[in-house]
Image (tube, rainbow, N blue to C red; front, side, top):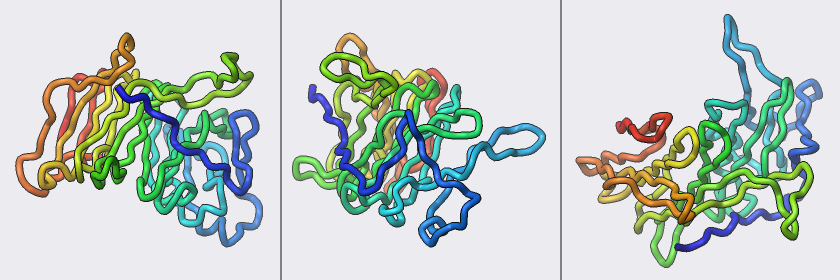
Amino acid sequence: SESPSLPSTPKPTLPTESATDPTFPSTTSEPTEEDRSTDVIRSCLGGDCWTQVGNDLLAPDPNDIDDGFGDLVQLANGTSRFVVCALQSNISGKRSGAVRVYDVHGDHFSQAGQTMYGSTEDEMRGVLSGDGRRLALAKPWLDYQGKSNRGEVIVYELKDAQLRGRSLQGGQQWTSIGNILRGEKRDRFGHHIQLSYNGSIVAVGSTAADNKRGNIRVYEYNDNDNEWKQLGSSLKGENIDDQVGFLESFAMSHDGHTLAMG
């Protein structure tokens, strides 16, 4: 099986936050024009009322104009970790997409692992497992081997950063596990993805497959083979333009063994 490579991570023009020294703009200072046009993320705790945790989390790179920071946001169920997707990020090409994972520490945030970037017109998006240890990245608009909008999904695990076989103190990075999962021509494989709680099962929607009937494929990770293998047959839409596998059109249970499809 093919071993995936890490997404390209070009060096931004301005320094970005790190896991050891996060920097977030203060909401008490006078906002600039860039601040006004930047989407914000609010983390809240439930109770008798909703209370904001920390300052607004602003898009970290002011040079990445209209990046859509916060287009998709997801909390890992069992942790204080969450993922923020910027589908319109242009750092690695037009609408390449960028994905960042953050941890909540009291009233502030730190980034977990490196920022992940897609390539031109990928609109890359990501989803966390319930325990926050695995991250699935999807590029539904990816062209591959002459097949347009084929799409692909790669699953990553957060591990200690390594240099010449030795762990770097305080550093962690997202490292790919298993083979690359890909759809067929014009499938838009990965338009919606879900991981089970422990990240061993991933469900992938292909919204444009089979004349836009769409389908959902479920894969399970085999540790011994370091490979993702499909579970059962693909779940398909019944009619043209059903677009099964569209955003939020299916949900998976905690253990990954039950799937609800709309």
